[in-house]
Amino acid sequence: MGKRKQDTEPLVTHLKTYNLQKDIKNLLKQINPLLRQKNDVRIHLEALRNNLISEEAFLTIEAKMKLGHMALGLESLIDDVYVTILFYDKEHNMVYHGAAPSIPVDFFDFFATINENHLLNENCASCGHALYTKETVYTDIHTSPLWANFKDYILQWGFQTCLSIPFFINGEVCGTFANYSKTRSKTFTEEEVEAMKFLIKGYETEIYHLSQKLAEAPKEKKISTHRLLDIALDNMYD
Image (cartoon, rainbow, N blue to C red; front, top):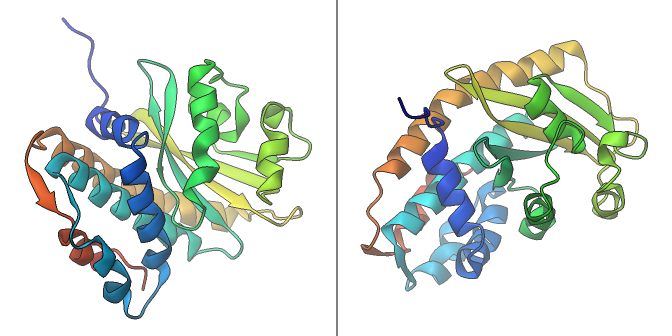
């Protein structure tokens, strides 16, 4: 009997492919800040109208926008939190950035360093520890040994603490929601953590369906990016 594939494998595969493409990265740089706006977002996105991308790429961007909406949902619960969604490729022991609409896309270049140098383990930052232990992990980035390899890089972006919450699909750990703060003294109450976990539990089903949709994505069909306008509008935070 063959090894059972992760339920999020199609989504991880697409993130792995399209996170490396500059045109997709540039589109996301335009779209992510707009997901937080509540007025005239269509005008801002009109610049995308005449671009052509593959249906597969379109569905990946659509998935990332939906993931971004999830991140914004968590951010709405607690002040001074910047949420990122990280996906775990267990077979290759690698991690891939899913979404973080409140953080510049370039921040996540350090994931490439982790993957290229095979650094992911129980002691690799908050998310590595959360993935391996399957437990929620809170760290002070200044002092935690988990950040030894990345502390200087993370601090230059202004982040001081991180709370990593793993998420699961069918009992298998598939990634983390990392909650960064720019306040050194930032802590989370038990009630706040439980509220975040409750919301993430609901997101797990959505993430599963996003992954299954990508599994069926056509490879060659081209599509106008004007369809991203309506998707972006649907996923604006309100």
